[in-house]
Image (cartoon, rainbow, N blue to C red; front, top):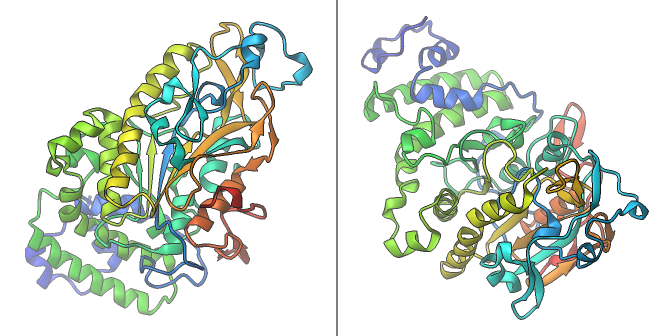
Length: 475
């Protein structure tokens, strides 16, 4: 095993050391943090030298940042934002005439155990599960006609996050970073928070794939409150800040010499930027992630809970220019309620409802709401019928589900599209995941057909060969 670099000896370092040797000898502490995010070998063609330089979008737009609240596992639309009175009428009875094709066997109709009520001036009905979030209903656009392609978690997660359920593609956070660049060189432009471990398919949810590695998401385990545990290897206990700075200067010089012979080497450029970002994060992240710097009244607003702390941290990162923040419900697939739906959905919504309301309130008070696009939803929804044999849960449903948007130029107090009378299939103004992505990019100032990246002889985009902007959602 190679011994770590001693910064005191850097001035006497052998001239025969290659950049690879220096990286290998720096593979502890700070080096480990950087190397964990930059070792993928992209084969990008014509990548920009300065991957994180701020860039203008195609046209002026209200949104500059995105927060994606991901309810992984698939929340039930008919128990949250899509009321279906017919389910009470048909409770326990077969819906064979509806031609319901599901992943697993389901029984008769299952009424919602929750009460829906009209909310706000718009009168949009929302269940009591999200009564606090519903205080902002006049600033939200509810899409009740989402649909995907398959009823399985893995491909549906890939479709929602990367625009393709089968092939390795960049995540939407990576695309946004690629399009707009970074507003803060001392923090990642794309952060993925998930308490307690990874969701299904793990880091593929926030990968950069063939985009330069500088655009991929940085994972944070938000079950922790200690900075050293939030971001693994953020500290280098064996070297002082000045010693690390000397090491970084030498590494930069070696990399620049290497890069001169390899123009447009996206992988090398990503290595340089990731290593230097990791060094700068030691100072910037310590301040940004310290929730103790917030007033007691603000901490009380969010609540001292896991999701409350996640969303308070999200707001602090928005203030510091992080471009795309994905906030997950937890490891695995928490919302995947094949049985015990009534209790589990109540628990999960209870963990999110107050913090989401606090987050939206705080964004408005701080003038961040109009420049921040907030997106809520899962990879699919759930069936209106009860799953067998327990008959107290719902199966996966990709034919029709709900998501909502707020802030960032969204037309509030809006309902777009509809499912059938039971909430199974999108029937009015269906919205494919590619349409959602196209609309998100439009609100950020991009023509989704023009935001492309050439790889392996083809121009790729987040929306693949589909996607349309839902203009009725625009303010």
